[in-house]
View: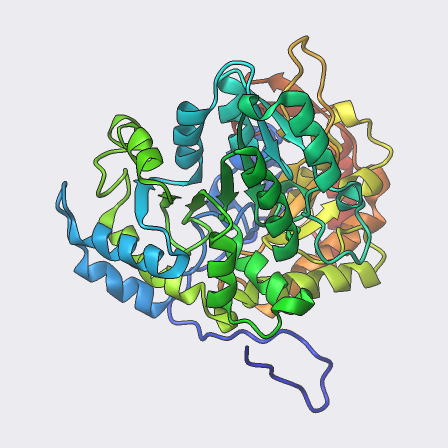
Length: 482
């Protein structure tokens, strides 16, 4: 990895790319933002992108492509069956992961659907280090249940633990004994735990837990959607891996698992996904599900242009100068917010910076969705769209009561190669202002609540006139047009 040191200036991350295409941004006045968030039902997913100044909702499908990725799109073979584009993608994945069989799918949750259809039956258990919303929803839809067995210290927001995504091996053994191996559909390891701050899992922990699974005859599955960030952290934080190349580490990880799936909206920097299967019989047991849910076996519901781009993106994901950019900018943002005293998940992980809404909005009861309120307040005070990752992102218990999240977070995602350092400084400044006025933020309540994945399409309202008061305070500080 290139390390650029400064002579006089304090050390800051440097963009390892130059900008060739730009998209103009617009910052609406605060009064307009108040109107827009009300129309969106206080749900940042429902905002129009044209009403947003900085879109930090996600890094899924919104990363900037490289010039090589874009140029590769022109050679796409658009045949319905037998597309050469697919074979180029498949061969590149086999080169990187060493797994022969590939099932294409249009994105990560489509892969999760296929895996759930194939493996999960009523009453089954799936072991995870931590769940992801759609992965859990597909399992529970099939009548299964999820056991999250992350180490307790992984849920401590402020720490210096390098691998907070590590799974607790004692909990795993006890869970297998309780559930029995026959009732465990598979063990899913998320390489970069999305919902607890993009925190990585160590290679050593993956090795130990997959050895337990292999001994008990349990299928092992790696969610590699955030793998590129996790590779960076293993390379820089795990002592035994510092002399290994990214490609070597990737192959070492891949060799531990029976199945690997990913969203190429994250891993590969394009839009698509795939399931890689080591065993031929297991591959054939799933291949009929691709034509049923996705499309033919050589496009899987994806645009072939995207497939060509992601094939180049897979190679770029093996380059430390490329994969370091997200973690370095996130780390800078996290450290600057921490200096200001803003409660934020430390150490900085992958995917984005994560604000600890349970501390910032400790005055808001969990049933009034403190993380949801905080993410709306940030849009009001800067036009920044983040994502709620707390109780609002959970589903209710069968009896209708709230299932309170372990952590109440606001995610400020850093799409790769999209934002500059000055824009990052703007985000830090507005978060600091909001933190200093945090007592003005109030709660939310549902006006329309879908049964499943309610955070995507649900509509809410404020429990008081706190949004109006917050906007007035903001305008007093920054002016009517800010």
